Structure formats: C-alpha cells, structure tokens
Length: 281
Length: 283
Image (tube, rainbow over all chains, first blue to last red; front, top):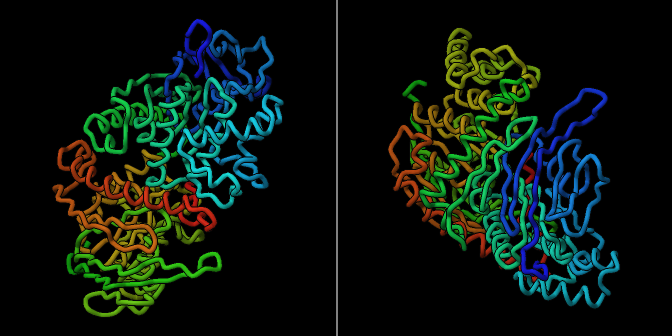
C-alpha cells in the first residue's frame, strides 16, 4: 500500500549518530550517544535494553515529540530530527502507547475516525467507510464499533488503537511496550494479531519492549541498546520463518535466540549495576 | 531445614466458588478437582482472572468453598494456620523491623523456638537467600528482589507443610526474576514441604514444576495436568532440552486454546467483558 510512483517501498528509518542530552546547561545527562541504526522499509524492528537506557527517548525523537541534540534521524529522504530543524509529529509516524490513549467518551468508531476527520483529510462518511474496511481486513468485529472503550477487554482496546493509528496510513508504526499490562497468555494472542497486521500492511514497525519472548516472536531484527548513554551494541537477526504462530515459542531456535538476546541485555544491566544506577536483584 | 517436617497432601474435591463481581454473581471455580502431592511443587497456570488466587485463598483458609471440599491430610481446612503460609505478590514485611527481625518474628511470637535456635535458623536462612550482609537493613533499604527473598526466608522459618506462592516474582525484571527462580528452586529442593505456585509465565511454570496444572477460563477448573519429569536439581539451561520443549509445546497448545476461547467470549457485544481480560499492572 505504501509505494511511490517508482515502486520503491517507503518507511526507512535512518538513525545517524544521534545524541540526546537532557538539560544541556545543567547536569548534562546523556540519554543517547552516537546511536546508529538503519531500519529498512517494511521491517519489524524490536528495540530492547536495560531500563532507562534511552529507548523511549529515541522513540520520541522519531515520533517528533522531542528533538535530538546531535546527529539526525531520517524517514526516507526527510530529516525528522536534528538540532538544525524544528521537529514536529506527523501522521506518517503513528505511536501506540503503553497506557492506551483511547478517548473514553467516544465510541470505538468515534475514536478511529477522529484523527483523519479532525485533520480535514477525510469526511466523516469516508472515514467511517475506511474504518470499517480496516476493521474487516484486520479481523476486528464491526459489532464493537458502537461500544465505548470501557466495555472492551484490554486486548481489544489495543486492537482498536492499532487501527486508529493505521487509518492515517502512516509509513511507520511506533510502539512503546503496548502490551505491558496484559498477562502473558492474552499477550500471545495480541502478538499473533499484530503479526497478521504487519503481514497485511507491510508497515515499518519500531517496537520497544522489555519482554524478550515478545521481541523474538515479532522481530525481523532485534536492536539491543547499551546502558545509558544508550547506543546500539548488537543487532540480532531472527531467522525464524514467517508466518509465525505461537508454536514457534517451543522451538529450539526460538529459545536459542532468546537466550542470546538475554545475555546481551544482562551484560548491560550488570554495567548499569556497577555504575550504581540500579540494584541487583 | 529439618527433615522432620513432612509436606502435606491437599485435595480439592469438586470445589465450586462464587463471587460478586461488578454487582453480578460470578462463578469463579466450578467442579475444580486436583491433588497437591506431598513434597511436590504444583504449579497453577492460567489466564489472569481465572481464579488462581482463589485457589490459594482456599488452601490458605482465607476463604471457604461454596460447594465441595478442600482437605489437607484428610481434614477439612477451616481457617488460616502457620502450616499453610502464603508468599504474596506484594511484599508484606513489617517495615519497622529489620530483615533479621522480620524473619525471626514468626517462631518467636509463636513461642516455638528458643531465641538461640531462632537466631541460628534465621542466619542460616538469610545466608541461603543471599541476604547475610543485609540482615540489619529495613525493608525500605532493600531492592525488590531482596525484599522477596526476605519474604521467602520469613515464611520458611516456620517450616510450613504447604507453601503457597501467589505470583511472587511478578513485576520483577527478567534478570532479577531468573535469579529469584534459582534461589527458590534451591530452597524448594532442600525442603520436604509441598509447594503450590501460581504464575502466568510458562517458562517459570515449567522450570519449577513437578506437576503443571493448566486452568480453564472462568468458571475455572483444571483442564489438564502435565507431569514435568525433568530431573532435579533443575537448571535454567534445561530450557533448550528436547523434553522441556515438548512439555512447553503441549502447554502452549492448551493455553492458546483457552486464550482464544476467552477472546471470542469477549467478542460478544452487550455483555460487560472488561473482567475477562482485566489489565494487570505489573509495576
């Protein structure tokens, strides 16, 4: 669905020597330093690392919520974060948050259509038609469109949020631990759901997590960050064929990759511990 | 620990339990039957809200069944007792006592040990959970993992016959959690008590369990008992072994089936579904 006239797919995120310093005049906390990554169009990129390593800082810079203090981030040819530009969020980069951010006073349909209607990109009836098509294509029952978020399970809320993001036809989806509040068993279903969305829409996905099973299950590549100042220390390819379902969790290859990622993350947590930034167990 | 302390057998016989949930009566457990074998580690796994904590409460004696019987060594359970101790999701250490005093509190207040004996046992246990250097710290001075280790020591010093672990490692980061599992395995393998451990994390469940009980959605019962015949002492490295992966595959199949059932139930409109997949705050 995302193709330019010349047929080249869109949604490459190039993170080029990015640095983020908070409070440049005071204590100079380096959240990220010399951070480099090249995420391909249509790639499922998982980002892991110890707590406080700058993962969300990076996501905020890509989303346009906050700028970088050094280096640059590009979305395809466009520079979206750098000290010499004024950053701004865009409909081409949609974020699905940890806590969930549905308007409780709007129905499912009202929530999904709000963005494009408010931006004047679609008329209400167009947006409703588009929303129904998306719900249909992505396996969310249209019966729920008149319900309010309070009447949905947390899994369904996440599904609605994903559709609310996709109706803007973004180039990339940015997810910050969206399933954190779910128990492991319901989480598994959401993973399968997100994979089917990914396979249908071919969007680039930038997904932050602490859950390593989640990382391996979903990823094309796993980007491991160091402890603060955060930079990428390892990129681990997940060579498990797609389509994937829950059964891959019990394969040897899956567990091997997870243990590898775990060792990389634990090395960083140990460094954070030695630096006095966290307690060990 | 002393070996005189034999683990008990707990039997659930067709237990039913109801609760009022958002003004509606809900059946939590229905025809729930299983046996906690003496000296074994029984793990209960199932989706959140499926009644795992209710089972812990019934064994602990905090609640009574509405239907059926819960018996320990042939006797009905009528109330809480030191023979059945719970380690909770949240720590329950006394904030005004040091780590050492917290652990000693039980046997001293029950007057079942002399001061000398309690002192000796406390030091032994604190060493086992790696807290010997932290004995004089107050709970607020300990990290989350340390608090839970102190909690374990505080329960174990009473030499309970049944230890009830209600998602005790939830909310800990992956690394701390694995360390806790290793400490806990060592402690379990050294005692004769029966343990019941509740979790929603499958790897944790398999690496710990002798018997893995897979629960259905509400109204819950035991869907399947998988015997985990991996050798003891258990080591984390077993997660890549062939047998481990076979067990995991079988359990995943069953859990996935339950999760799908839960989500299709919640697909029905006009019922209040929010309880089925209630969000769990892991912080």
